[in-house]
Image (cartoon, rainbow, N blue to C red; front, side):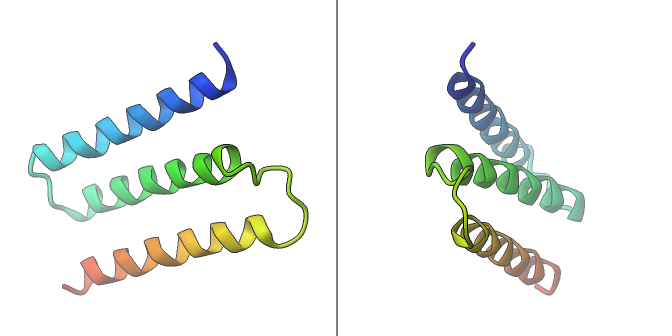
Length: 82
């Protein structure tokens, strides 16, 4: 199995996990953490592999990863204070 195939399967599995949580009607803090963690892992795969930023020097990779962390943090904050 190639690395790209493994990453694609990981993305599909994580997506299926989050869809399963949504269909089950789970709405707890634990579910929120699981969904945000899955999103972080998926985002990291996309940033590193599909955007080809894994070997990039300089701040570009960290800027994109920081943006992802900021958005996920704001989503978590919004759900915790809603």
